[in-house]
Length: 105
Image 1 (cartoon, rainbow, N blue to C red):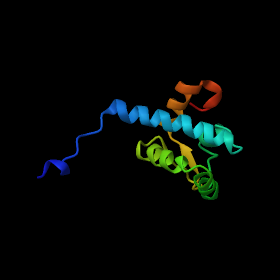
Image 2: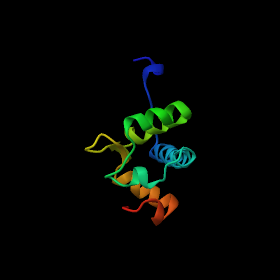
Image 3: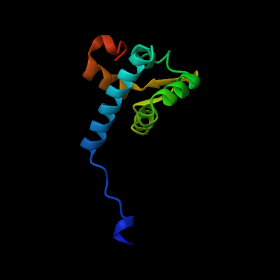
Image 4: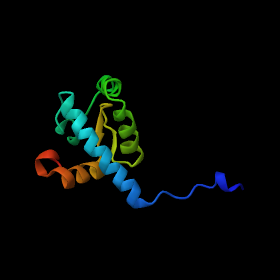
């Protein structure tokens, strides 16, 4: 197999740093667009698909961060089809921003 086709595994520290950066960016974008952190930290709330599309249109970095959060299993869609953080995402958000930012962490 040619060397250019062999992909080295991404170091765990890099993935966690990217995830933390995306959570921080997501928090900022939520506030900038009239949302609060509890919008995604409370499992029964979340962002509807139309809200995700609006965020992606207004801030292209949102789509990249959303993808990182989903791939890292820090975010998912709840039973109502709304984008929310998983337990992992809430724990990281709590670690970064404190109890008030992640009420259910």
